[in-house]
Amino acid sequence: MKATPRTTGRKLQRMRAELFARCPLCVECERLGRVTEATQRDHIKPLAEGGADDDSNVQALCDDCHEAKSRTESTRGRWRGRRRT
Image (cartoon, rainbow, N blue to C red; front, side, top):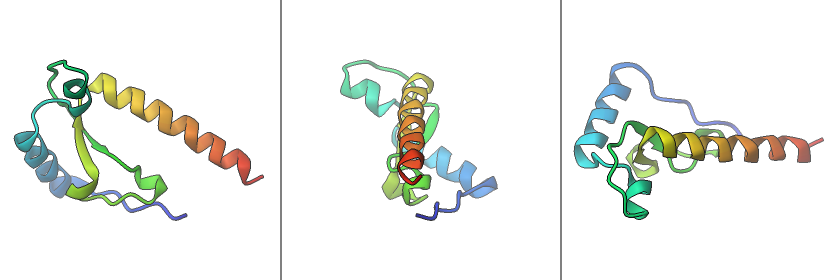
């Protein structure tokens, strides 16, 4: 599977600002009944797994939730790599 190209530069900064204007709180913390400022533009389906780099595939997360999700995705990616060998 080929990874989706990542948006960068001014376009990315505009997309981040628009996301945080729409969704200023971490969606995962809200789900758990907490109120935490969102600081990360997260891809719901990772680009490495074919997710789109557009508004349909992003969510606002805090640093802690983003880090936890990234660790899970990294582990999943390592397992995927082992199955190919």
